[in-house]
Length: 284
Image (cartoon, rainbow, N blue to C red; front, side, top):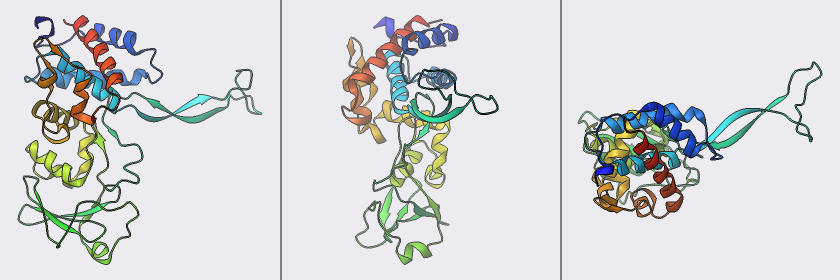
């Protein structure tokens, strides 16, 4: 539908005004997220594969939801009457608290995978062949090719270990670099095997396996999200934006299946519709 077709830049003043209007009353609203939202939209605007405002809206809504995170903030300390408390010298008392706030920027998984089978670090060693060796806490070893394909070295090796697994001697003796593969990004990338595959899909070889914090770089985090939603690779499990948004078809609820089944699908759909409204109004 013509109303959804767009290539070019959006009016940033209208964009900010719309963002504050639509989301300003959200208890998770944080004005510091606005420049991060604009940066993400800039990546989308520059991506020639994306010309449908509904695609843009759903990508922004996904980032909005997935990157809302616990942030520490300093607030005034009030008495039971709601008045500012002061110390003995007359200085206002403050305290720190944590709140769930929107960020619109790549984040680390809250808890960093605690209690999950990818929680514990593994050791990664670059090999002269251009491959890498991965050793898990239980001693299971794998080789990983530059195309992100893993194969077992030790007999019966399986990915992942319980979060309570104690490191065996072969792990402790391994000369690889110890790294952790909890969730990072606009859409959380987890497991060392997925870091390897995702990097290969972006023609980055094993860079993400060897340096997982690269996923926190906005441009790389965007490429990972776009790659999944546009091609169905990785986290999207074969599902693409074009399945849910094409012609007269608009399904913001079922589109959640690209990322996480039906989890919070209705809430994210509402956010996506709000972004659609913002973007249509901000056409420059």
